[in-house]
Every structure is written in structure tokens, then in C-alpha cells.
Length: 95
Image 1: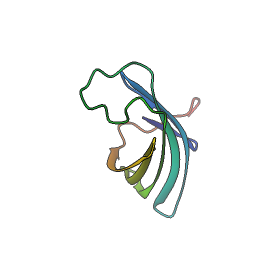
Image 2: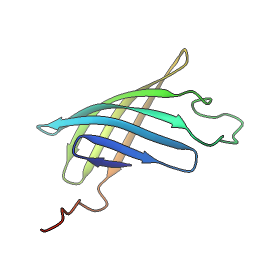
Image 3: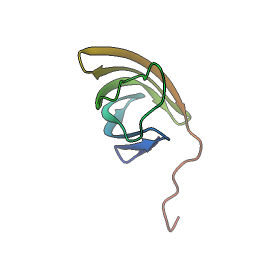
């Protein structure tokens, strides 16, 4: 997952994510859409093929972020929690 200039972009072998976030004073919040692009061959797919809207909030610092989220999949709501660690800061060209 790439977080840059208020945008969220990412994906994996089965899903992609697109969204936006804002941050201030050690807190962040935002939303993104999770869409399955390739059928996940699992007996219990997490989102069952639905396009899922996910809203989140949490803490952030220069090492990464913590987030708690609610995903709306069809008539179900699913609580999620995640910790994302910064791998490498973005270096702008010319610096």
C-alpha cells in the first residue's frame, strides 16, 4: 500500500485499493475502496467478491501508522485493525 500526498494506492494478487486520507497532530483518517480484480480461490473469501468501502482512523508518526476500520460488504460490516510500518520515505526528484 502506498500512502502519498493524501492518496492511497495499492493492491496484491487478488485486490486493489484506491482512496484518500488526511493527517494532523499524530492522527489520521480516511477511506478507500477495495475491489477484487482476480477471483480469490478461498472457501471463505473475506469480502465475497463485493466492492467494499472501508473507513478508518488511527495514530500516525514518522515510523508508520495504526488504524481501526469498518468495511461495508453487502449487508455486513466487518471491523479491521492494522499496523503499517514505513519501509522507505519518499524522496522527491532533485533533492
